[in-house]
Length: 169
Image 1 (cartoon, rainbow, N blue to C red):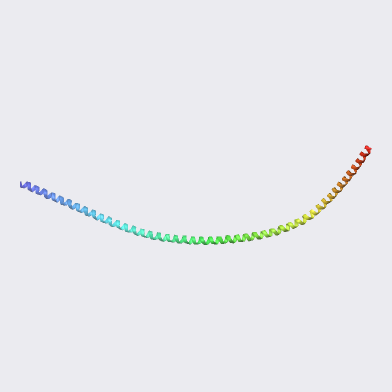
Image 2: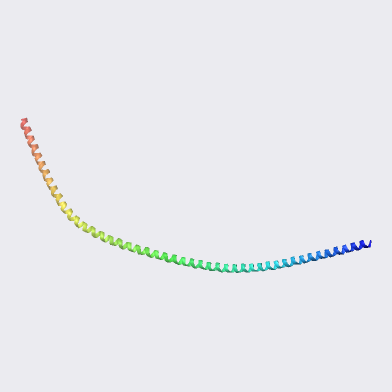
């Protein structure tokens, strides 16, 4: 029975040793996993910190870029207002100059038209006077002829009346 006890004791000791080795192996593995997890966690924290710093830098540079663009927009708006005012002033000046030029042209045209009318009137008056003289001459001729015809008819009528009275007698 002692041998069996010793064999059982030896088997138990071996089992304890095997279990202790398994426990040590698990502890070593667990320790290695913790070390890796810790290293990974440190690396992730470092990357997170770096990403945060990059984000802050990006926000800062974006804010500066936005500020510059807003300043450029304000400058362009101011320049646009200035150019619009200048353009309005130029347009007013051109409109006034155009109106003045038009008024001058209208005046010159009126003078030239009056001169042309006077010239044409003088030429036309001469032509009209000559034509009037011709028409008056023709009128006198026609009136004279009409009077002659009337007298001729009157004398024909008298002659005809005398003949009728002679025929009747």
